[in-house]
Image 1 (spheres, rainbow, N blue to C red):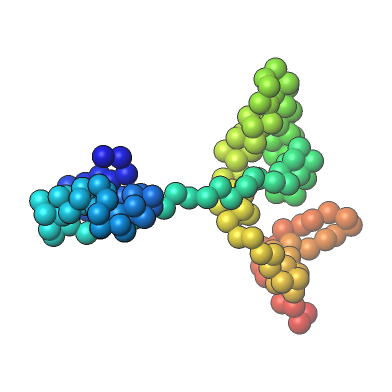
Image 2: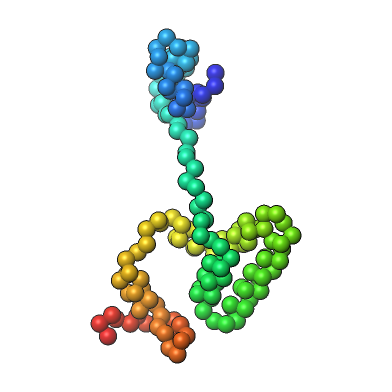
Amino acid sequence: MNGIKVDVINKKVIMNKRFAQRMANTSSEEYREYERIMSINPAFAVEVRVQRTYEGNRYRGLTYRFIEAYIYCHELDDESRRVVFSEYVEERWKALAHTCGFQEVRAWFLYKYPEFDNLYFTTHEEPPRDKIEELMMYSAHLSNGKLIPKSEPLLLSA
């Protein structure tokens, strides 16, 4: 019978949502199958699995321009920027030869910056503006148009 299975290791009877709905009718074949399985395994827990819904494009907004800006902002010294941008350009050239080229560039980007995938797309809300400014004041300051990282925090009252 489709829609029900027995997990002996975890001591569970697992059924899908459709099987559970049909089983609600006590004269159905699904209910008889459920009774047969539960008579053999009376101590097993019952679990109804629901299929996950598709959340849409998780990486919407991740474009070539965004990737370039992200690299520029997160690589602080010129040498590391040159190295990463050369890797990026190489990936873009490889992508031209494939029909699904952007997916390969995106995979390279997520491999290069795993913290981006873990932090940026897991939260859907933007932090308050004062928190962003406080973090910026804490971590870096602008001097002659250049972003200079700080070794010690700068208090907001200063």
